[in-house]
Image (cartoon, rainbow, N blue to C red; front, top):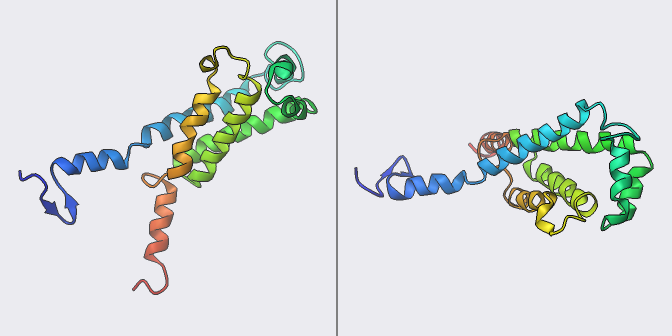
Length: 173
């Protein structure tokens, strides 16, 4: 086998594997975040205690507990106006972000949504974690950034739609 030879415009040999690996480097991150947010949304929607105004494990009690220690108490107050409705919004947002990330549909928008959810949770729920790296929402926020920047150019509905638009573009004949 000759290293660096070309077949059908593709590099074979040393550069080929490295190039393929770098092209798909964000796939594990996309899978992890997609499954995690999908699971988080489903977990909240199916947890009988979470979607309640008060009681052990409820969104209402959680928000009241973190209100005074959060970086943005006004954000918590916004959710406290209707804790159950806010819980549904968060759960459905996580579900939508997770699903869109997994299938790669509007991947940058989905990643931005995931980053915003993570940012809001960091500024409210996990803000008081000491030291800061004990809280998990900041690492999630940082993990979303590469997907906001790169989207899902491979193994995604976005990539399929882009290829289809290129194929059927007027004047592409």
